[in-house]
Image 1 (cartoon, rainbow, N blue to C red):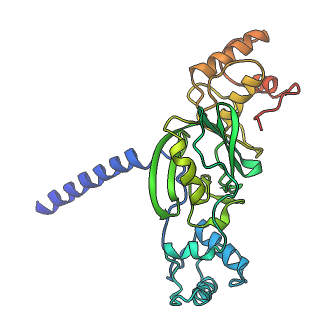
Image 2: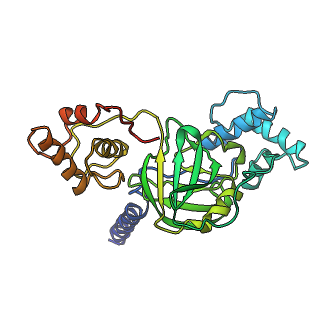
Image 3: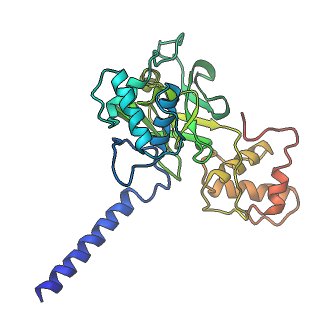
Amino acid sequence: MKRWIYFFLLLVLLGMTLVMLRGYILPDSHVCQYNRKLYPCDPPLAGANVAELQLRLRELGFYIGEINGIYDEATVRAVKEAQLALELEPTGVAEISFWPLLYHAEAETQGVNTEPPPGKVHVEIYLHKLKLVLFSDGEEYASFPIAAGYPATPSPMGEWRVTEKNYRPNDAFGTRWMRLSVPWGGYGVHGTNAPWSVGRVASLGCIRMYNKDVELIYPWIPIGTRIIITGDYQVKFRLPMSKGQVGQDVVLVQWALRAAGFCPGEAGGVFNQETEAAVRELQRFFGLEPTGVVDETVFELINRGEGKEWPPK
């Protein structure tokens, strides 16, 4: 009997754990790159951060193998060689503190205005230019290089708001973190302990900056600040599209509706009531049944372009 009671209590505990996980982890289909120590083991560790380390070690002449994202023997040897060159104990373990040592230049943007902007701030990020521009009262105030997402893990285009700000201990997110209101994942603007990655497509979707740069703008950007991210990568559209749908394709449809002269609200990636009303208005304008659903016909109408560029760049 006691055995069954223990089994029942174990199931209850497991169920409570799953509920907690559902509440705190599962809503984000994307989580930006996490921080971890890399060390030799069997089977070997693998992931995007291993590939990033291999790339940097190859640039520095320590690694000559394939960029395969596997912390294999060749990668461990390269880490040991780099550690010897840096006068460190050659353990083959890439501690968190090891990453910044692989960068030999001043990790900040030069010639930037360091005085706080006098007006209302918003930020525009151009993925295809790998650039973040800070505006004050609509005028460009300062610009900074960034690292954006890999093609397989692109940064989210859209019109976002800063929802959370945190100081960081110079881990994979650098020294500052600003979360964005992207509804399909945990994306943000943050620093990095891999400053050589700035100026490249190198992240799992977040926007990386030099630590000194993000430290500079961090106090200028209050929670609620508008962050607009644009780019030119291809997006797969899911049609028909209707109220309640969430995703990158929804953002582009919202931008297209606006370019066509209709008002879908902010392009925040959620097909909401405003977006549905804009679709109905477009359908009435073209003599179609006002269903509020983006089908092939509506998609072709808003995708004509008519000389207007969308998404904006």
